[in-house]
Length: 204
Image (cartoon, rainbow, N blue to C red; front, side, top):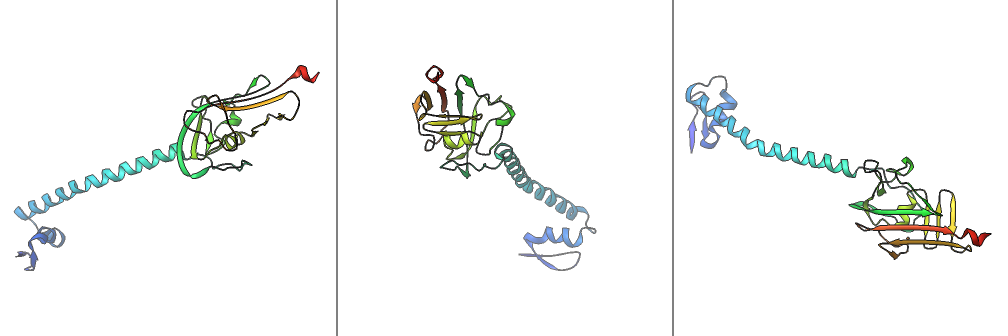
């Protein structure tokens, strides 16, 4: 069905009539034609609002995602297994690292947010570790802190501990069980304990 435009005489399809009036004769309209065009504009505006809101939600989601996950890039370490920085995750757990009675304070600035895949935050006083990449091994995690950890050795704060040395013991446990740091991949809620000690009496 078509309708003849009273302003220019053109035959216009019924469904295009109001759009034609708005596009070609906006300055000439009055009465019913003006009301039709105005109502058409309000309807179009209402139809656009859901899309605008949808875009706003997506933008907010992206901003929130970046705020959480946009951390420093993974550091280069000598760890046997490197994490997958392209596979994001978000895990937390506890850790204690002690050598000869000295407990490492991970709230020290040198340990805060040093790596994108494994790190501590100052806003929670480094009370938990955070993992943001799949495949973070215990060896890699410790390496990002400037230390070296293997099944039977630890290098921390310039001190080297090796079980090949008489009177030296090194243990790495997760949830109470011994693990191989090179192979063990951290999981959410893991309680890590790394302890190195020397028998000073045996050295004398």
